[in-house]
Length: 178
Image (tube, rainbow, N blue to C red; front, top):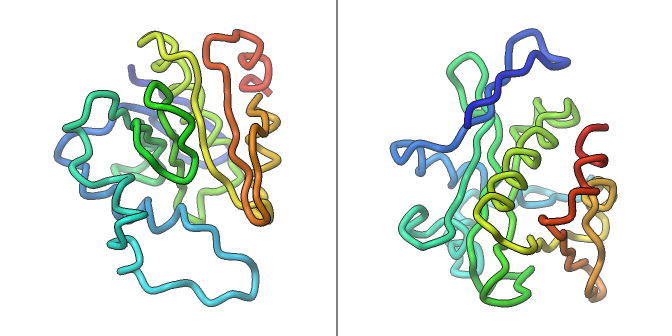
C-alpha cells in the first residue's frame, strides 16, 4: 500500500510500509515518541536502550504481527507508526497489538500522523485484528488526538491512560477523515 498526498507542506508525503533496510530508523522514532513535558530537559538518546523501551523495536520485523508504516518526503523518513504484540505499557492481551507513533518534531501537527493511522488501521482490519492499544501520558496533547480518532480510555493510573480502538468498527473512518 502506497499513499501519496499533497498536504499542508510543500512537498508530497508518501505513506508506505517500512523496508527491512529501514528498521534501524525505528531507534530515532522511538526516541521522538518519548513525551517530554514543556520545560523538562530531554533524556539522553541512550534511554531507548532500556529494556522497557527496547521491547518496541528489538528484532523488529521478526515477530508475527510486527507492522510499520512510515511517512516519507524528499526521500527522508519523517514519521512512523508501528505495532507489535508485546507486554508493554499499553498491553491489553496477547491478541491485541500495541501502537507506537512518532513524527519528527518539525512535521508534527500537519495531519501526517492521521495518514499513518489510516494506513495502520486499514492494515490491521485487513489482517483481522479486533483492536489496537496504546499507552499515553495524560499531559501529552496526543491523548486528545487519540480520543478524536476513536480510541477510548480503558484504564488509567496517575500519569497515563491505556486506550483501545476497535479497528473493525467502521465508525472510526469518520474520525480519520476529519
